[in-house]
Image (tube, rainbow, N blue to C red; front, side):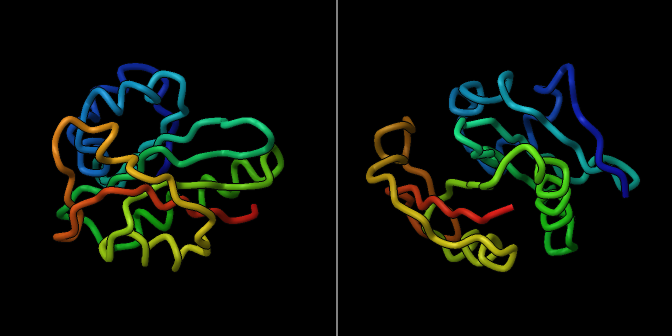
Length: 147
């Protein structure tokens, strides 16, 4: 397993990115300003995009694992990689997600804790209803951990 930076042609991984963020226009808001990483294990299995949000906060904007390879530790490996790579430059790692039983437990197992909620994020920013784990997303739950 190897994790490498993706410097150019980030949209080549759009199909993967859309697994975690279902609207391309939302991905466009952070993709070019973010730093992207691809996890390769006999082919790219997962990707991650992080952004500098200022004041020592690094945010995971997108982390996606190919559906065929989920629950094999690839997502956790990307989170660990980001923590290690940025621990000297940032003090907080943040992620925003829907309050869904499909995603929140993953982040909590990675050591994230609930920090705050952005009300109506999904209803205000997406052009159609977004569902995760059978739950319609309305508010964004923001989780954080010290790194």
